[in-house]
Length: 438
Image (cartoon, rainbow, N blue to C red):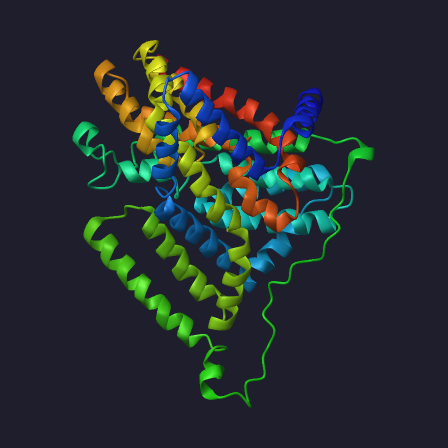
């Protein structure tokens, strides 16, 4: 474990550029591959980039809102007190790193944005309180929980929605056959245990330890004297407006679940966490302040999503995604197809680190092929979903919000994340091998 960690750290510290440079580098690589491997002209590649640039505006807004609603919840006084109590539990750095990893994965399972922010806040608080805790390791543990696919997993949620773009091919695939199948729940629990074991076993050398130097985060809302305020300004510091606004999404959710059953989509998840955030924040003023702070954590998404959408446009227009996916399809059979789907999704995810965007390009190919050779459709969907999550662990794009809260660069944590990528990749593939043999 220590040798693997050191090798990964040395590789990342030497070779990994910052997140913006990585996006620029991937843009150039894909452009050149389109020209050379696919034989496309520069005109076609430039058009593909330009046409694709705006394709993820809606998805970027959804992801930003998930992050913001998660931030609002994490910044509420009640969640802040929970983080304080959790930070008092560990007695040594190993226990602290393990607890951060477990809490991170559990909260990521609940909501991507919630997990990102709670993990970052908990890592900061642990780094401040636990003597000898290597802060980059703590932040890496917080990010590594992102591997889990939970209630905000866009691909299985999309496939469970009426009118999804592949309904004519495979129909509507309920989440009871994908996200909440027995084998996927078992895999999720295995990864939770494995994540705890890995991060309690990694021990940096004493001379490498970097203790957190920042200040404690204050989640408590200061009392405001409203006696001399105009009545309109007083309302900003009362809970009632939050409660009244929360009744709207709450009522809609009740009606929706009553009429359609308990089905989740990205938009519904945003409404659920907006409702919770409104109820947990004590006033419109505190809610607005949390939003103001959370917007800073969205800056990577706001700018880099369009860049990766441009990359995706070139990948789609040039045929690179089709060529790579079809190569895996051609060498697959009914037993190996989910495993090869996992690997191909992980490789293409490096160029298109957006599950929804990647699924729109690669999903139809994989599902048509799965249906043609008789492979298991739910397993194919989840293999793709896990493949997308797998290489997220060494793609700094999704770590940007957490790094913004923690005050670190991708280079600080990615050595540990690459180590975790190797370990969790072997585990997930092993599970799909066993499933194919059943």
